Length: 148
Image 1 (cartoon, rainbow, N blue to C red):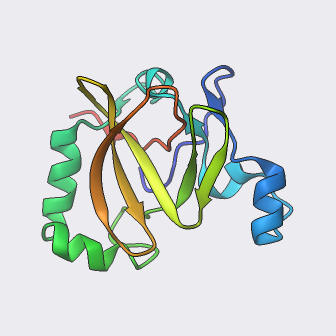
Image 2 (cartoon, helix red, strand yellow):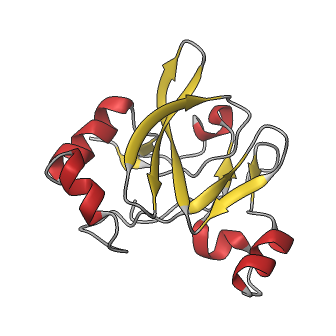
């Protein structure tokens, strides 16, 4: 997918807090319209439409390599659109329900699970591409990959 998923499922997904978004950007639109929804890891596992799936760490690594490896991706993600991947910096929702990082960082769930939490990729304005793991109750963006 070329943009963040925006499929409302009720429990386990949110739009970036409207009040915070409006104060930061002055935009009257809901955060989901521009940045997609934020999902818990559990919800991210089942939110992709039929024929699509949440990418694994291996698939994220393949994307990075397709762009020429991490140093190149770090430069290319500064551009809004590169090939079919638009690194929308939709921020995140932490485990306490606080929204942060809109327009500065983009966090994307991976289907791969680490021993201490779900794993994800992070893109930010400085164009860093990093791998982390976080509590499964955090809200991160989702990109789906077409099944082969």
